[in-house]
Length: 318
Image 1: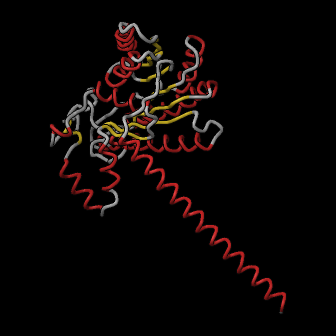
Image 2: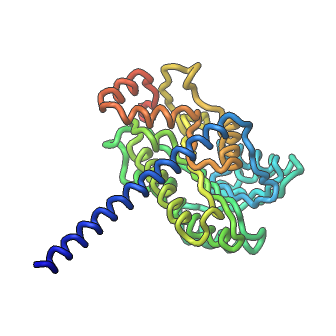
Image 3: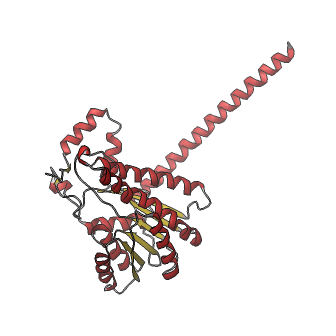
């Protein structure tokens, strides 16, 4: 009887100790979160400190036109070594020629279908042999068929996933070892505002851009918990509709506020996000905050806001 009482008392004491330990850990977590928010508010009030990227070796996919071309020009203007990768040799060479006229960073052209894993793996070997290991990977390439789901062919859906999602898996697998070799690196992925909010006529495209968001969030955790913590960083970019030709029939209710973005402006914001080590950035920056707050509201409130903004794309089959 006495032994049972002793065991019961010991068990109760252990439970109390465990509860107190959990409470203390929660309070410490709350304190750390509060301090982090305080530091972020201070940083917001101070001028941004942007890191120097003049010595980086930057590989960009989809540099034949649009945002990819502007990124190549912007990085070259900052003195980075730029590796331009595209499936279209003529367009890619035009980008390289424009970048070389800046007479700043070295610029190289490589032709590759990044949706093909074997081509990407071969590309990684060629780049390492001819230029050296890269330190920055920018997964920019993407395609965007814009019509209703029942009018999307099986080939179209497969292709949009191959280009928008699987290419990013292949490039990360191929070039992460370059960054490990250097003990530093940065992986930047272009998702889209369609990776934050679902839109009609873009069901497969939205699915790929949501996939990119999940890929990058999980990759960040894997790198954060692994041996290269704080040495290899990630940034995910969510641009609003950009005037690159992908949006064939844009639908914009408030063009003065939410008109199509200029690719040069988008490229500048992406480089700024890279240089400030931002984790996630929407362009414009307010869209991520609007989305996060809207998702706290009842579903119908979010739908009412979406109907009021009334932006998206019309079918390209009209």
